[in-house]
Length: 393
Image (cartoon, rainbow, N blue to C red; front, side):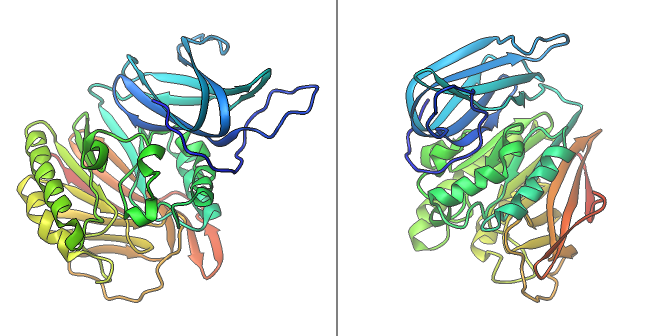
């Protein structure tokens, strides 16, 4: 399915040399990955003007020739955001892909990308999570590149809020500049934030898992081996959102009940924390709506965005983790630790590595840089600044 939105900006591309002068590249955002499963994967991009699109892909195998493609898909005169779901793929397999835009005889191929489908019964699962990436694109790129380069085993990335400073073309272009390497090789799956922050283009921009609410994408879930992963919309506060929040709660109850018999671990993501040292960051409305369900259905970890920093709070048998060190402004608030606080850092750019292995779920908070005033000091090692393990049922 191809969707259309027109803006003006330019991102990198590898243009085919031409004797005659070519117009500027039509690429706005280089290809990036979205929802993924055992036999499907979504690829998206954005162009500035109408072009013909060729998407080439092939399963990588031993002795594979780089010029060989399993299939070439062509789409005539596409403009704006394009989204293609590749289906019928082989589980636990790596594919290479390339997207080329054509205008007459001029071709603009992007660099080669890779994607990997999920395994049907993996022995080890690793994925990443982070949040708060608005405003400071260079710091965001530092964190995104650390994930892209340092976590080759990661199956996907979840973004937990604070995506962009404002929902306009310039800020989204900064986002996709910062995550070009990461999202070009890892499925990139955000949770829904306040609509004023992500804009009407959010659902067009990201290929999301199936769930409920607006377009069946406002909140979502999927299974991966022993994991059940849930993404919720936590911006549903206030009288005008009460009916939608009730709809989400009903969906959540049914979703958790269905997963209770099959999932060893349940991890929930949302943009607003339920618990935090700073009262202005946490939401009593969400605690009232979700807490009892999380306890009833054995949710293991709840990971949220929030004010810039890192917090790990243990409440009611559940690990609540606030990860907001993706490159955006870090918190300057001085707040006493909340009840149940295990760890707290306010000066670290960081991300989370979540690993399920041998009946355990491990969460590591990986620092990328320490920030003091305007100084950003990359960490010499990737040793976790906090870690914890959950034993499986």
